[in-house]
Image (cartoon, rainbow, N blue to C red; front, side, top):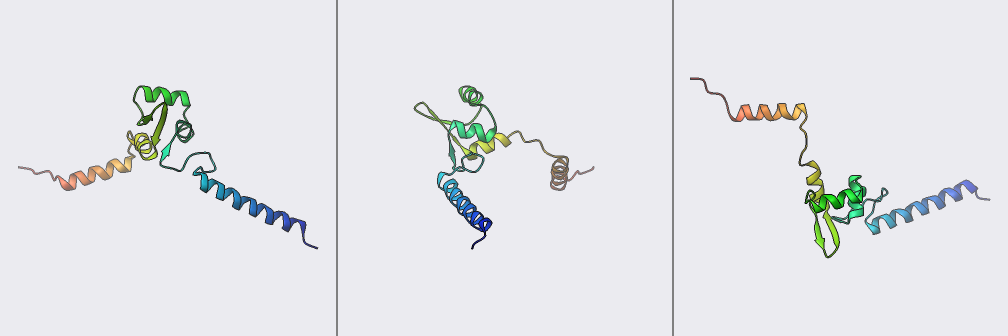
Length: 111
């Protein structure tokens, strides 16, 4: 007689494999965020952790990059990623590295 725990374990493995196939086919990961390059407003809301109404306000004031087709809004994931990082704050080590590069490229000449 087979061990019932082994049977349960095998069935769980099959269920996990089926769920993985479903996630891959739907282009949505486990957190519900789209993995496709084009997202709708609900997907962007989940991705950025912002409310849908806040996103509507940002699109009406043209604060966030988007495209409009009829009444629907679409967002390019690359554009959203770039928009999020456009006001990136450099770390101290980044600033020191940039300063060193600048000094090496532009040596000070004394008379």
